[in-house]
Length: 327
Image 1 (cartoon, rainbow, N blue to C red):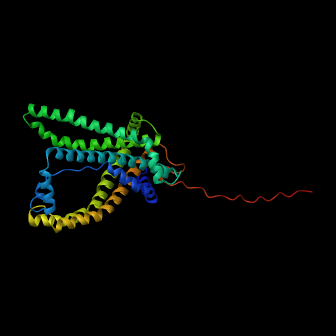
Image 2 (image 1 turned 135 degrees about the horizontal axis):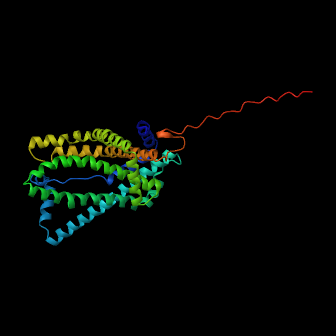
Image 3 (image 1 turned 90 degrees about the vertical axis):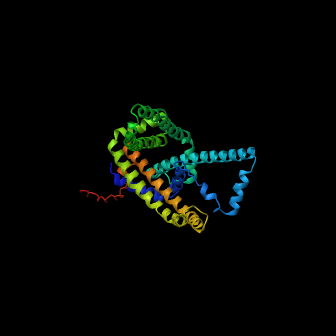
């Protein structure tokens, strides 16, 4: 497979059809994860008086009111999670369908058509990724964690020394699983098959083209996602600089000028971050879709290995002189 032509074709598709950037933003909704930390020191005497009064008043509420507020917050979080999963799944399906349509040159991808046309595939793509996610959880909770507990007790802690190499081994394994799942998602959308058939199809494409899949995974995961993602996120270091300077100066997170300046810079850069992140996600998904189409022979007629179809120039027939008639 000609990787250069596939990658260049993916770039042309997302550049000529920037509606795919929107679906890239949507696809990112289902793949973001956050972490929590302890910021209790931020709400001490350094907090604004209005915020101090708010938290003091919240602590003095009756238990039933606190429980009601906490329940409402949990409900809102659950609703946001459901919306994020829905938009993330629709975004992924829209990118696959949009790339397929643009590559086949059937029609120019339109947001409304891509969004509504992605709905018939929603439950299959969602179910596939849900099954894979549950398999990850079962593998870690049911097999990996108990195994390490038993080995740690038996070997008096020596088994913990094997934890780091095993975790390093799990990283490439997870990449390989993600590649198979990626191909399965594309199979469901492009070939309109079910979950199990799509998973089987994804495994067949991966197994029969192992070398090409590994090379494309290295290009997209390490060469594109890691490097370009780092460049896109680099300005966030400048955004956080005022806050970091203030923390170093005061020794604590305070609601001073540094905090507000960083917050304003973050709000200003957020739209740029979303657009660039959506374009990056669209490019990666388009590259995987084109890879699947090329490896399964579903390319546009006359467009081998990511090249645009070339229409032959019309040839005008040469005039034919009539033969002389002998008397």
